[in-house]
Length: 587
Image (tube, rainbow, N blue to C red; front, side, top):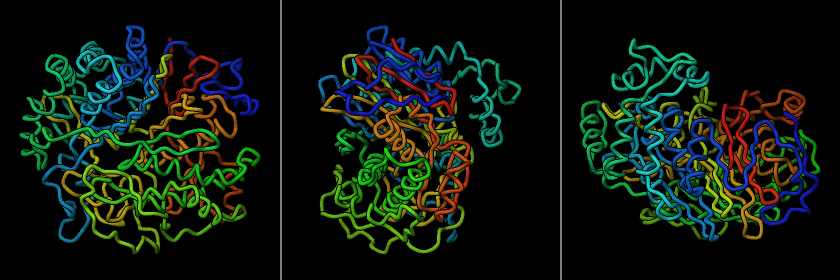
């Protein structure tokens, strides 16, 4: 892809880019009245159709998200959860936490058997699932900022289930790769495989009969059917039969929570992100705060990659210790303090890799708000120093889960939704007769402090399992404002690489002046502290220079899948990540 450079940022005004005359990149689209970008063309088309029908950006994003649960089921679905950031046309910011919660019978050591940690139980099967929040989050988002209901917006998804859709190469590849795990559960086989019990090939028609019935029931009876009706009863019976602990009462008690946004700044732009239990808003802000102490725009590619890796390393060390559900633990706001970032920046040597033994000490006593903050005990202060735990590293085909939806309209409504069922096909366990594949978000807890999860991430007591608690996430839906007006919405998929993908999209746009398509498509780096490896998409010359400066480096085929929209001269320009078969489209 040709990278198109915007000539400086001086000419930027609120809501406008500096070079509106530039040609569109192959992964970009332009619209005057609305824009939707997702990882699946069919879902994007559903969202744009809602815009044409008079819906706003929030309506379009929810409709697209429901369609994604049909055509992109390994990434997300109504058996999972989401984080939602909205900037309304009025200027009000709405932030919704629809993260899954641990069932009431969950306990700190539930994945320990005879003194040994058993991560397979937190990753596959009924015991791996948290209480799903996606539908509750959609309903709250529509009440606060939409014009339609879930029942009105779920119809296109139901039609896709019933009419069927053609499996693309990506869909077929993931289903084939996961066939053995999906085949362990009869209801999963019945929902996803062909009648002969085999996975779909590219070009074959897929129908989702079970999920179609569920969508139609929600269309008729509303979200109550899912949380307090027939679905809840079916789920409890299936859980009891398969060794799970979730009950109908867990579903009935679930609530999506409206939270206060993480608001920071970067080179004159306001950055609006997701607060804990997302680590995304905090550490996107923290990394950008560190970078603000350097002249990023004037750096060469290798220097910039080195700086990014060093800033990421410091932030992820803090993430491992400090972050958790703010209803249960005290997460310090000092993590996004500019002075704290300046101190971290002073630890970075631009000529060689630094050693980060553990977390920092952010200033102040202020914490991110929770509903209860009921755990007021002193936080463990010992840190997580010492050698990296074994079993870490990048999960295989990590890009095949979680998804981001970007949407905007000409009224000024801007939406960033990142939704997930965690790893590919979540728990691989479908509630019989419903087509709903349940998440495996319990693995996002620290199932034992210091034990890596499926992404190689480690955590401390702040993210230990507890009943009703929300597991820590890296999802980072983000909106940029200039003088109070929206200029960009962006988010990504890819586990912890979500945070670093979003940071680099912002740097590419703000510091390097790239168009949104180029900003999402440019090569990325990633470092998450543990394991102590820097990942790079570009083999040379960056990798050799990073090695020369003391980094352990692995070349990766892809580090995150992002979608984004920017405002340029009164028009909306959207882009999908060229690493996946997505689509941006406007009207």
